Length: 188
Ligand code: PNS
Image 1 (tube, rainbow, N blue to C red):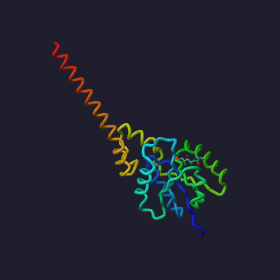
Image 2: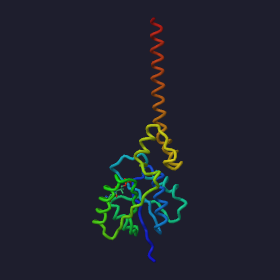
Image 3: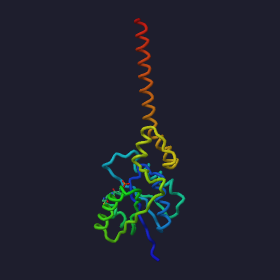
């Protein structure tokens, strides 16, 4: 029987447990699954492509049929170049469907030989997105259980300097206030 290779393309900024759930499901139905990170120079990502690749490699090390790669240009061209016959995408809720359908049909128009396969992540991840993870982490909220521990640590590492700067600004303004109030006391 012919080996079936699929690509799982995306931004993965950062990879979440929802992505991992889909990779796990995909690894069970495809002979080979290539997690393909889009190198998109237009976007200013939180994690650069190498950081995202390193996280995805660590997260998927236990799967012998999963590898991580990066690409630019059209997804369908990349898929054909790596010998894939399927594009795997996740659909969380109805709201994803319209965009995903549009993309799948455009990809079919470009390369009719490729099939898009939609899979649903576990319900508990149905509200989860990289964008929300970034937002929550940037605003100091907990993303525990939503991303692998490594990603959580990396988010802290990425965002800590900002917090430290925030704390510094806060304590500087507190000191400023204290100085002002000492000044006021002296005058009175
Ligand atoms: O994780 P994302 O951001 O939802 O992934 C979107 C992605 C990377 C799959 C999509 O933007 C894409 O395929 N980009 C590559 C350029 C391309 O092929 N564009 C035409 C899509 S119909």
